[in-house]
Image 1 (cartoon, rainbow, N blue to C red):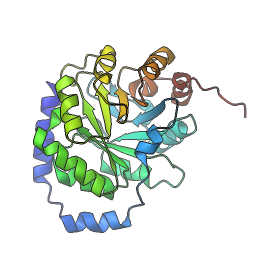
Image 2: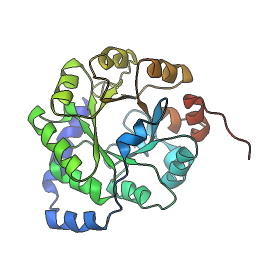
Image 3: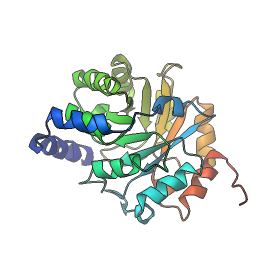
Length: 262
């Protein structure tokens, strides 16, 4: 089961690292100020978090991510409200250095989501030290009692938490922990099967004052319009963009935007 494998590896990886809090504090002091990720997701009618990942366990290498900064600029000029950048190296080919590379590019102005399988506080410190503005917290990847602490730490560092859920129990856990933004992953991270109807079912459990994000399996303008009608504030899109011949044009098509003539 891929999620169990990733989480087990991540716990071992974190345990082997010897990062000191003082080192993180020094780097955080030098990082650019956080951008308002949650406000960006309330733009709209529906906002897009466009993803940058070099590869995935299910699809292999994405050639469109060969130049990640150029891809980020393409997303930025095509209507994205935020970027999701993979901080996992082993399974998705990213890394904290990839996040930092994009976060420190003066041409890129969008908030950046540090997309990682977070199992320990030091990963939160690393996210801010890299210049990230938000952190993905996957309920299924951690014990329930740890989630609240990690959300609080994320907020203390000036970032936002996007709390990812997969079923009714996880939505309840996320809300009880104080999540201000809840993601619904339409992809089962244990089997990689996708069911977009999961967003419909679980969105009904999330209060209107909490930001709702539908993740994965979104490939057409019809999908996005349907999610907008369900009350979603944002979508997180990766593979539909990364497998397109022109990721920027695909993003604009999803959002119903027209390309301006140059």
